[in-house]
Length: 166
Image 1 (cartoon, helix red, strand yellow):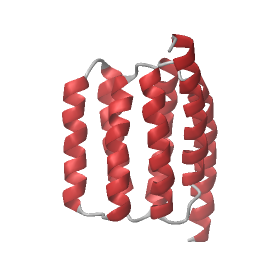
Image 2: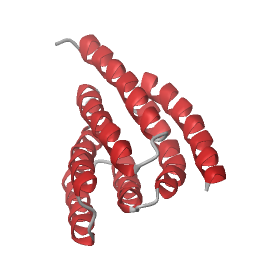
Image 3: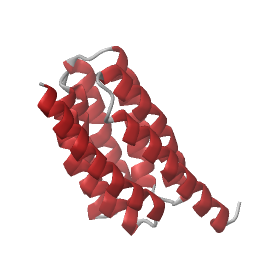
Image 4: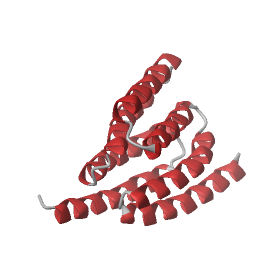
């Protein structure tokens, strides 16, 4: 495949990410939220592979595993194992400050996904999405960058909506 083909595939996967992640934050329960995020992880893995962003790709592979596990069981042992996998992955693939920050951000996201309160997940996602907007822009995932901005706005609205309901 040509570089142009890979770039186009990456942008299409960015749209799939937008639809699945953007929809997931509006789910009322964690199980449905994580199901859509599993689809999002698969799209992200393909997107970042196509863009040669191997840190993000590797982290999304672990996130895919995390979301599958957390959807079925939620215990501290699983949380610790997943965090250790992220740290090990980070050590193996470290390339610059963005790879280190990606590890930190994804660990925070993991701790949030572990929570049984969807509002914690939504609130934390606001800050996590801001980081991914920057990362996606720097790595050329321009469609994902624009869609992340929309997801950020949507997430803020979802957080406020469910905050009023409680």
